[in-house]
Structures are given as structure tokens and as C-alpha cells.
Image (cartoon, rainbow, N blue to C red):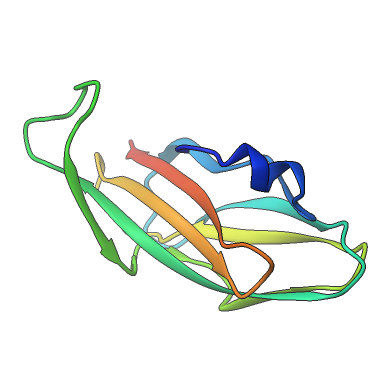
Length: 133
């Protein structure tokens, strides 16, 4: 999902499993969201509260399949839903849900990053799905 700061990673007290929301191809649905969750663990000695936000990525037209396809990142993504915040007590593990909205047309690519801020470090989790018949 991008570059990694190994110095920060070595001392991290928050971990994710898996490290991204990779839906793959999902069936188009008029009324049911496609949902996944990531397990978040706080191995630190104190509680932590994260605020969540999304950054939508839209590839530039005509660059699909290119090794370094250009595109545009914009705040927010109405095609997904997730909780506004997540609080983990010391040593606690919780599921962090993310869902792709129903009613999206076939062929839609849902792509971006979910960002968690307010904890010891900001964290970015990539998400990706393609709506298929």
C-alpha cells in the first residue's frame, strides 16, 4: 500500500491484520453492501483513539494497467462506509469494518486509503474493489 518507515514500524504499538482492505472483484448489488474488516491490535500500555477519514483515488483516464498510473487523490469517498473513530484499550484487539456501498455500476473501481489519526502515529490502510456482474 506504499512506502514504509521501518524505524517507526519497529517501535509501533498498533498493528493490522491484514494490512489492507482488498475486496477484489465484488458482485454488484442494488441493496446490500460488500463488507470486510481488518483486525486492529493495540499492544501499548495505554488506550488510543483514532479518528478515521478516507482519501479517494481516481486513476487518470487511459492509464489503467500502466506501471505508474497517474491519478487524483481527493478527500472523502461516498462509495464506502466506516466508523468515524476507533478506540482501543491497552492490549485490546478490535475489528475495523469497511463496506463498499450497494448500487454501484458494474466496472466501478473503488480505490483509496483509510487514514487513522490521533494515535501515536498516523496509519494508512489501502482499499480496493472492482464491481463486477
